[in-house]
Amino acid sequence: VGCGQPLEEGEEHLSDGNWLRDKAAIVGFGHTAYGKRGQFAARGTTSLVIEAVIQACEDAGVSPADIDGYTSYSGDAVDPGTLAAGFGSERLRFTGMGWGGGGGGMGGAYMYAAMAVATGQADLVAVVRGITQPTGARFGGMGRGDEPPYPEARTPAQTFAMQARRHMHEFGTTIDHLGEVAVSSRAYACNNPEARFHDPITMEDHHNSRLIADPIRLLDCCLESDGGNCVLITSTERARDLRQIPVLISGAAMGAPRRWGMGAFGGLNMAARDYVSAGQRTIADDLYRNAGLGPSDIDVAMIYDHFTPMVLMGIEDFGFVPQGESGPFVADGNLRPGGLLPTNTHGGNLSEVYMHGMTHVYEGVRQCRGTSANQQPDVATSLVVCGSSPAPSGALLLRRFS
Amino acid sequence: MSAEIRVPAIGMALMGAQAVTPDTAAHWRAAAEGVFTVPTCDNCGTNYWPITHVCYVCGSLAWRWQPVSGTGTVYTYTWIDASTHPTRELQNIAVIQLDEVKGEPVRVPGWVVDVDKDTLVCDLPVEAAYATISDGIAVPHWRPRS
Image 1 (cartoon, rainbow over the protein chains, first blue to last red):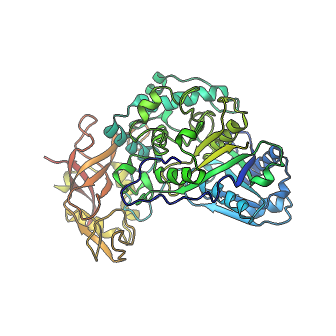
Image 2 (cartoon, rainbow over the protein chains, first blue to last red):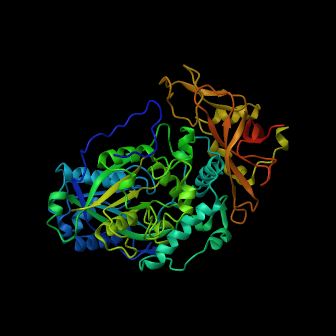
Image 3 (cartoon, rainbow over the protein chains, first blue to last red):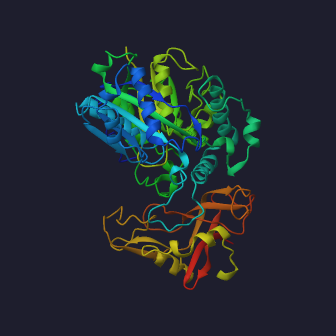
């Protein structure tokens, strides 16, 4: 059993058990066409999610009426009662909405679903997320609770830029290291028919892209996109009888380290080592203990890439390298095909589409099924890392049923 | 002295009424007196940030804004793309780690003035400066310590 980064003095490993290990499985996923920001606003998220649920059910070989639980995150406006009524479900038995804005709360949504089917509280749970960017406030815009509103630091790019700057200062991380995350993701997207971007980019393109918040440039930032999304989760026992090779949820974890607060968005007062991190080292520790696996067991990783520096810090938090050494790790081509950790093989939020992490789960599942457009050889395990900064963030460890 | 400090225009626009809340008014009023304050536990004196309504050390619910030294170092910073910024001016945002606090290190958000892209660096020593926004209300920001 591995861990993420070494624990602080006084911290303990909290998850010793295999209480959720391999008890639930992903049996289907589905999504609408992916649109650019605002493209599907007039249609609305309920309609988008309904289409995605139907797609997921076709993938799994089940009926939407069989779904008896729904979970979501990030304050998704889609209403589970409306979905259950629309599909004619006999009854609704379980719902769960995860705290943690953006893609951070996604881990919770999957964890609730897995716990529900593992404990018999529900039989078939749909994790759903519908996004039409301009229908609410601009996504990522933030108020910061009771903190005096020094109003300049108001966008995610700015707060993540400050984490990146400190990481560069402490560890010698470079613009080229950020660039490699963007360039490698685009290279994968070019092979993915569903990706929104298919034009290759070079390191020079990255460096020449517009500065948004130094050191973050335009090509360090994710897309904004519209779409409906659904992943179906049932018990491993039932999953065996369905259409697809089940992809087991070997581990699920969520949380944040001590005094993380709202992370870089305004907490600012976590331990110094955690400021220059994705805030996910305690999640990694729980996840690996939950799954009985460690970093060396991971075949591919889907790491939430709202901004390139957070992929670097995620690689560190999940223990693939010691803290501070992710830059040279990616510069060696380890995110690429044949590397030590092929990462975001769908193109990620940066180059495929920005569905708040749902597509990272799809791609983790595809890699385990053997159906990715960028299929890596002999994949048994996929790590899915949720969006960093909110509390909670989360992660999933997926494993091909065998 | 405080009148000489130029607060970024966007800050001026966004400060105003929304910044002065029952919880934060004392912070801005202290700034008008040239004093930098942070949330501080009434029971054990621990300084912290942001407002959490409970002391992470002793659990006391009683807190108030209390003066700290008003010096620190630039922990990290970013320069915002000028072309898209409402002011069209290159601006920075920084995180300042305060000197001489009680408890774990305290970091606060802020702006650094009198610097450019060459001189604003991590670990730069800075001191608080104050710009008056309206009668009795001022905004702290930071400038290089001489």
